[in-house]
Length: 377
Image 1: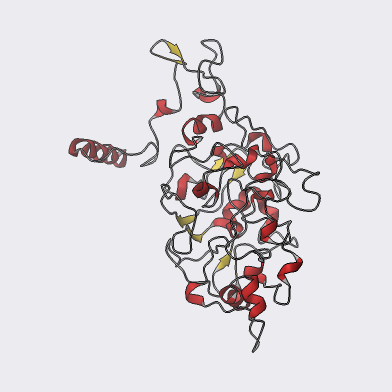
Image 2: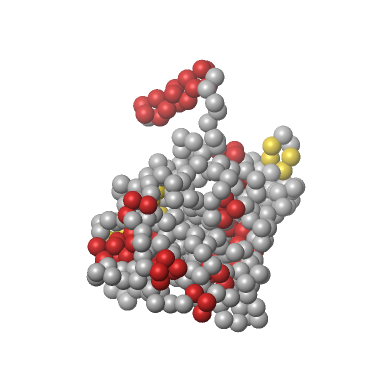
């Protein structure tokens, strides 16, 4: 109780001194009636809004679960975070023309859940993959998105898709963890988180995507944290899976640091026992293929060491992308130039030239003897 009083006094001091007002979630718990209504009314008006947020959706007295102002948890969040223009928005207006900064930075953009096709692989034009496969399919009446109809539980786990909401990952009542993400020991529905993410993000007001000198800094915790719901895809699961949360080792770190794109790799084939490429460690960092390291910062340009770790976010974005499975690049196409061609979806920016193969090669370098003309559309 004493600590709570100190926090209240500190907040009061800020107000008295005329300092800038805190943002809604700053300092932890936001003000309660920002999300809840105790009596389903305010100034004599019902607070149970419809899906569009323009007016009452239920008869007066029939409020929503948990005394929320909107029909579900995600809609309560998206009435503020669903905006296209605000720096704290997570949902652009048009999947074909998203907010470029949001689509190419950090967690990505939920708007791709509304795409009619994200399949740029074989038969992509006639065999569409719907937007529900673009990432975490949060259920929202405001955005007209429903639970994933194919993956009814989390891949590699048992979390129910029908219950997926913004608050499945973020704690609206406050936590000291990065982006209000749940911390070790917190339970949400059937999920018990057993890790805390340590990271630093670039400014939300940034108007461009990530760059080698301005990017999120992933320090620790991601794979164990994501494993809360996707555990069979993660280390210690005893399954034959891609490693995650594990050190890269000297071999992979060397590949990452030397690799500077397919064209450069072909021009500088393996020599002297080293992989292909002319890259140097000091400038090897590629924000499209990040790694986890306790020493990284938002302006770090150096590539990994053998102790740096591969993690879920090395290949995926947490919200959604215009590639299946929230991929940072499309895993189903031969070259980056093919992105968006078959599907007509938003083209994920290519960090190299038109002859670039999959960005899996940043760590695995399997294109040293390729010919770019063989896979450029």
